[in-house]
Length: 224
Length: 224
Image (cartoon, rainbow over all chains, first blue to last red; front, side, top):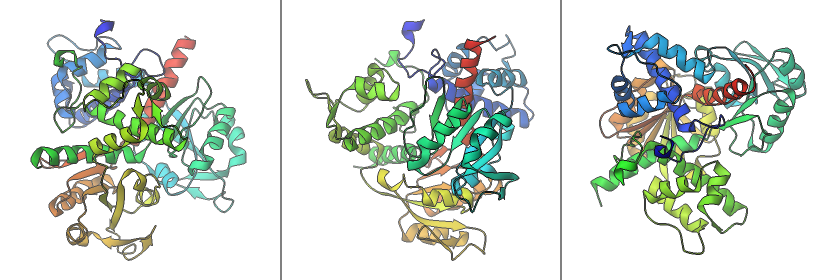
């Protein structure tokens, strides 16, 4: 079996391609939509069709983690939701600290999609003394100097770095020193983090490139 | 060859897996970093190593689009940058309209990573009369009613939708009616768009799930 696997990038767990983990999030959202629509069971072909994947892809992705279907029934949506959340680690609540309360930081504090997926932003920090003490979306902004104390006191698991690029590494360093285990980096710069600390970088231009590729491909096919 | 390809999701161009297009963006950024560091040539193993992919993955991804290496030299960074930009369609400037100038919209208007990758935000719209007429990051905010006129006048190619979920479909509909060819959707809701209009959805919780998966996997490996 292993020789038939594509030589994909591996997630940090060492055995599962990062692209598979990404698709687990998509399956989870689609299952949550199905349940919201009142659907109780689904199939790899229905899930795949709604997301633009083949049924074989869905089955292969899930097979990395076990056998979840029932003969003659398919997948029970609630059950598969629980299983995927367990795999993603979101069968618990992760507490998150935000560093950088600029426009992007404020947008992240107001983002409605975190809590329902298992992430609670529990603290926010900014280097601007004029912002410290303010409350945004119910969260009091604190000084950067308070990071280590607050991360320990509130048992913060993860960090989101939304500061300008030149300050991102320093912000990440303080979070890591305080014991944060993973970081989502919104600054357009690569972070160097110690072994054992996970990071994912968000590059907003990448989404536009996906769209420009699709449009450019269609224009090439249509015209010239 | 085609039987050895994994049954991945296909990009809208019909022949290239979406995951490959995503990795093209990563290769492009890394090549740009290499050039900024003064490096003129690179190899699939160097590129792969910097990004956590195998050299075979890099070669396979690029092979979708042609042969770019030189015997005994590897890849010329500048040349490969040009080729990838041509493939992604970013060898030209795409004009982008933003709908929704809340916190996230303001963050997008201030994002420094778009212009260098070939995207120019050329117009911004909001439904709040109190915001219309304001200038943010040098861009005047206009009323939603002006979308069709401005999209035509300014030859806007792409749209970014950063409005609350209940208003996202309507915003997309107006952009599409005005002639926009692709949409990046930041609202946590699925859009229904006509054939021939590309869309990519940004779900900010997905990045946190990638990190929680990595941390949870490590905790499982270490403990229990």
